[in-house]
Length: 369
Image (cartoon, rainbow, N blue to C red; front, side):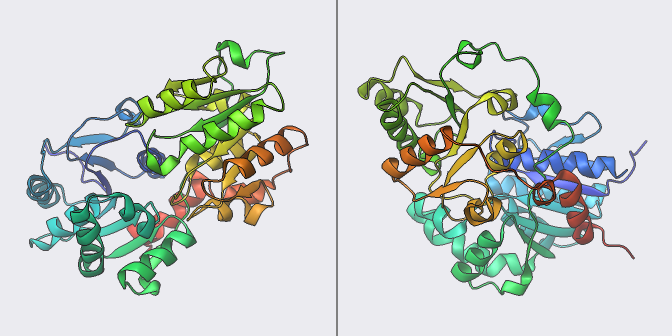
């Protein structure tokens, strides 16, 4: 017997451990809470976030390796299951979704979403991707039924660097703040550095890669340590782990700085940290910054493109420092440690809630008739 037709499908090539993947799962839960039938469609069912898939979410594993294989298996899924709308995220998931529909015979509405600052992200890819991605976006994104960017800065950047018309791109902030976030933040944390009476902990969270620029955070921490006792914890996995471990050792920080790897629930660390630092060179809408603010942890962030300044109300709710400037970052961390953090208006954070984002996405995925 054929299962009930899905209302919405969410599509990714795989379920990596990044913020965009968590955002898609939060949105899936929001759509499920609205009573919709939702499929999560993956090119291949692997990745750190697989265990976080909501129980009522149907997982579709296309079990295809290459992009072209996924195009045809996704097209088959769309023809068979006929979801009313499909939302994709990240490259090349967006292009794959568009191509799958335009092979013909697909009625599903295709919405693509951009989760990064396009011009910055492509600078750190291969020469072929640096050439192909702007071309793909310029010529294929207009085939989509809708285009979403996760911040105003990311939307403006996408239009300016691809030739897309700005009025084709809609900004919807990510569904970051969920009802479960505060509950998860209160779970026990037995790491000795977070116990009462210990020096303050400075926290960074993200994939260990160039974009997150953890070397600048580590160098800033070394300068903080010259002034006061403190510790540094970085949560995340990625290709730069060995480089970061070497830097920590070279700066004689091994006793006070730790890379704890991927953590399934980072929120108890956020809630107990003295200050959260986003050191990124670029972002789309940095989810972890919103999460730290939600659990009332003071924040320091680079003024990177894009999203950080939007989240912090241009610096009202946390210090914004230049990219790659460890001295200014250290000064901001010390200042944040020594003063009361600003009170954040709950109405301000509401714009990043699961409820608000779900309603905004519903308007374009399944608009009222």
